[in-house]
Amino acid sequence: MITLLTPVSMPAGLPCIRHEDRLMAIGSCFATAMGGRLSATGFRCDINPFGTLYNPLSIAMALQEIADGRTYAPADLFPYNGCWHSPMHHGDFSAPTPEAALCLINSRLHAASALLPRLDFLLLTFGSAVVYEDNTTCRIVGNCHKLPERNFRRRRLPVDEITRRYVPLFTDLFTRNPRLKVVLTVSPVRYLRDGLHESQLSKATLLLAVDRLCDDFPGRVSYFPAYEIVTDELRDYRFYADDMVHPTEKAVGYVWQRFCQACISPEAKSVMEACEDIHKMLSHRPLRPGSDEHKRFLEQIVLKIDRLTEKYPYLDLQKERESCLTLLK
Image 1 (cartoon, helix red, strand yellow):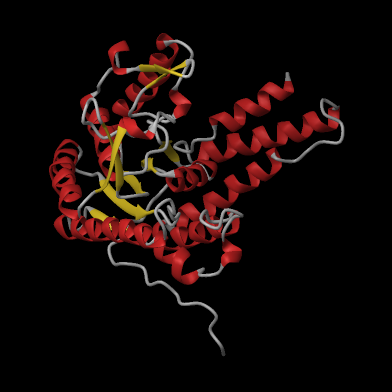
Image 2: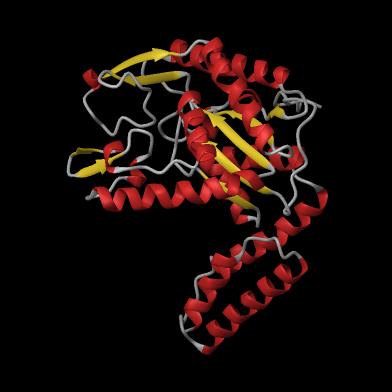
């Protein structure tokens, strides 16, 4: 038989995640994609409380601020193009007034801080080793918010700088929460601004840093090879979007399948199927919205959710239930 792909072997020591566990996913847009699939299948997963972050030092700073329970103040924001922004946060947290921006920022930050001591798994996805330092503050920013490029110094992090930041951070997090485990991934999305060679150097830097952290924290920090799965198992442009750098939905789905095979407990997989059935039912477009037939269909979904959460009370399906009840009114 002819083999048409090169399978990526899973590293030893990957965790076994259950629906009882509490998770937090932080990092690039790939973290958002994986975290979204976890949430959609009933897992309790907080996704990017700072919004999308790409470089490992901004991710580390976000984790530190979550651990410290920081509260942002007006002095932490700056105005630009009619909105107030935080240099640590994605544009989703920007707002026309500082009060509105701070409300968005602090509500998510305080919720993440309350969750951190109870976390079982922290899923971190590094996107790029390239950072942007603000010329005025000399601090690395999480988001440039389309400010002029002359406002920043751009550089690629060395491996040692990444590991020097994460060794004390992980040590502190594990001391605060002895059951916490960390799963690291490197985003398969390539950054072509400076060419493929620079993108490869950036990814290689991240992979070397991840490997060192796994060695420094055996049994506590592990690596899931999302980058290798896309670039080696799926090394074909049909698995990339029109921009030729972002994986297609099919590619993300394939990585998700490999993640489930490697990291999800057998019992959780059966529960995930039931959760996926609920989402398929919710995505159904009724021929006559509001009709008696449609209401009976919604009631069936609510009943299915109630039965599932009664059996597995830790499932996070409250939004789905509320959505059905809203449509039933």
